Length: 206
Image (cartoon, rainbow, N blue to C red; front, side, top):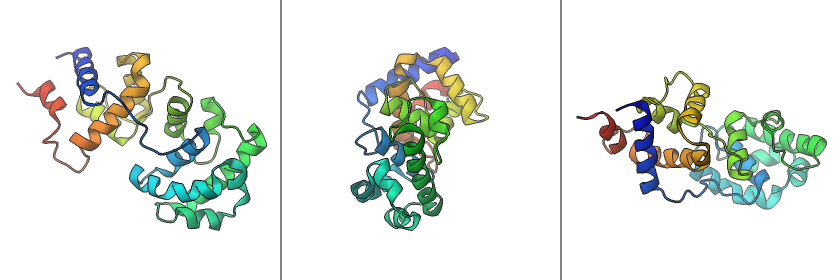
């Protein structure tokens, strides 16, 4: 099976499994999405969704977040890993949004990635899920599965993103990256043995 055939198989099977792709992180606008994604580093979406209702009730806008002290933000997100660093980043992020962008989340990678706590993956999620721009955010599930399916050399997430964008049509990027995440969680968890990973078996078992 060629790489192109493997990519087509992935897209076909994931469309059957996940015809709709709800965004895993609860949010109401691009700002709350960006905050939720920033909080999700090294923790689960489930844990983020447990914490953000209280956070957003108090600080659901950059204006309200900026008014809080770091220790107050930390208290609201203390159940999440790296809460010290994340609280510091959220306060500074809100302050810079007000200072540079009048409190409005910018719609360019350069401006997003200049905000504290916003790396390329977070910026890609905001661009795709917040604003609808074609993007292919790569998380650990996607990086691992793209490597497993031999659709990338797997050296790093930058290469994986580049290879994914070459292999798959632009109009499916926003949906497909979520489909791969859902598949990874359900059929090929990182700590599992991959017994349920039928896509890999379809590709490589004779």
